[in-house]
Image (cartoon, rainbow, N blue to C red; front, side):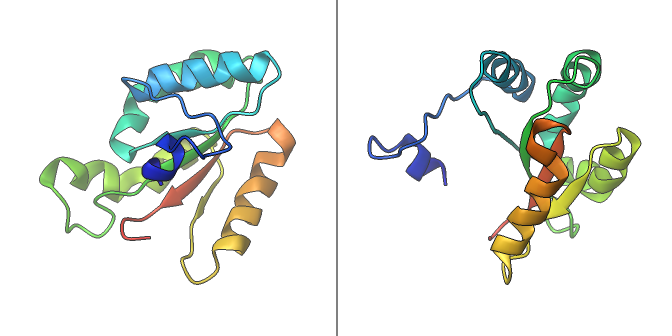
Length: 133
């Protein structure tokens, strides 16, 4: 996906960020300026982003669609991904962030469910993507 986003022919504007919390901050600013933004991140970076999400975006109603990888979901990844992989959906539930797991057999339905949860920008929602999709 990143190869497509980085291609000069890509119709979307891709802005890489050094950290996931920075990406949430930039996307928030773009959203407040009237642009549509999506944040792509690894689940390990979600921890970095929780402060920005809880202390800015969620309390000021700046809601973003987040696309988050699900490394370690099956316990067969690098050891540093085991805890966040095992607890990802629970963590999202604690912060009341609705989530959808992308179903590779029905991607359009998964994306539609995710966008419905995002509700036109009225909720921060998460599309979880397992590796290999």
